[in-house]
Amino acid sequence: MEQNNIAKWGMILISLVLILILSMLASTAIGPVSIPLKGVFTALTNLNAQGTESIIISQIRLPRIILAALVGSALAVAGAAMQGLFKNPMADPYVIGISSGAAFGASIAIVVHLSVPVFAFLFAAGTAFLVYNIAKKNGRVPVETLLLSGIAVAAFFSAMTSLVMYLAGEDLHQIVFWLMGGLWGSDWGKVTVAAPFIFLGTIGIFVFSRDLNAMLLGEEHAQHLGIEVENVKKILLVLVSLITGIAVAVSGIIGFVGLIIPHIARLVVGPDHRILIPVSALIGAIFLVWADTLARTIISPTELPVGIITAFFGAPFFIYLLRRKRGNI
Image: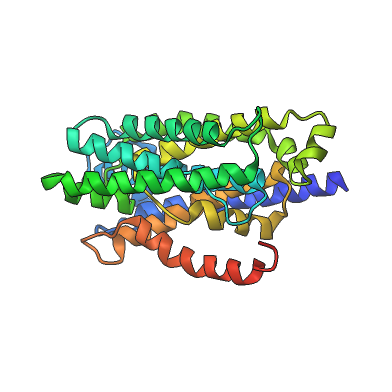
């Protein structure tokens, strides 16, 4: 049975990798300046070429598409981990206030003209530790308390972000656009900053796949299997904060990816986190690549924040989930 699963999982992963590669190639060709696939392949095989098409691909589209794939995979993996950790199908990286903290940090950075990625990441990590310590009781962190603490802290940081926006003056437009979520400022610098943290964080979460599987059956059951539940919670929160904070830092607030993609992945492979996490990463990458392609072409030459596109698809799916699972929530 296990060998059959491994063979099936392998085929699914290979198929998704191929779909992701084809999606990225297609997205590279699509834009205000349409580039034939032959031109795309020529540019990709010689990134230092100086032709117009090569410059458009190597300096504008390619880093943006790669960053979209990285951010999509990070948010999807973080959502899968949160839903497994909290045993709640409605959980996602935003539920414990990480994104709200990152948004507040980024808003401050925009107003005082400091590094947005650094401030967003630091505030995301700080928020995670704040929520964890508020929820801690007698050395343990009950999931229910953690969720409630996250909601309260998220509300606080959302209010503080609104205050910063009120006082922002000429920087208000930039803050609003950043909060909508978008990849228009993508460059190779952001890719090189985001990629190692997202890769390492995703691998770290994958290492705890078996622990998440055990925790789905209850914390007491997991403890009987020798799993140090509180340590696992703490480590997973740090890892989720890492990849979510970095994703938010380079792209702004992009909603629904961490919520809906893990559900789609479960429909494909089931609840086993050993396969759910990599499949979520790949589907999340594919989804955001195409969402961003729509965002930059649907009203060309102007572009929409990609957060609007993800909300357009994500909100109906979220309503569907609520109706489908309301008896179990």
